Length: 152
Image (cartoon, rainbow, N blue to C red; front, side, top):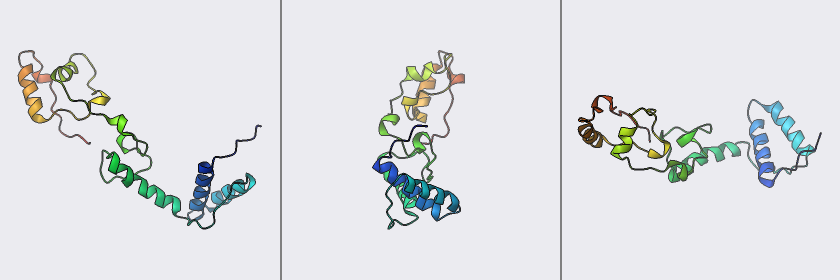
């Protein structure tokens, strides 16, 4: 079996922080095994780091990221989120494109009802009313959904 490559400085620090975190909780055996492996692979340790250091880092990540890219459900802090709840979200992933009446109407002419990802927020109720007026002659009025709730 080939030997694993030496961890980078960041990876070594993360392994150590995980070990410290495990030592303070119910997984003390796992922590001991990880500490032994770190010593075996000669990963440097830093004894002055408190056991809850990794937890405190995680608690600060969400609010820092929310200042730059707000999450879709405010107040929900999770490390396991996806999409706009993910800690790995990026501004480029959430561009908003203005809705055009033709694009809105096209969604109801044999295409899937899902909205394109880059369309952002749907049009407001006033815009929907205007589109309904336009659609009266085309027979789309009955098929035009009214969007009740949007989480953004």
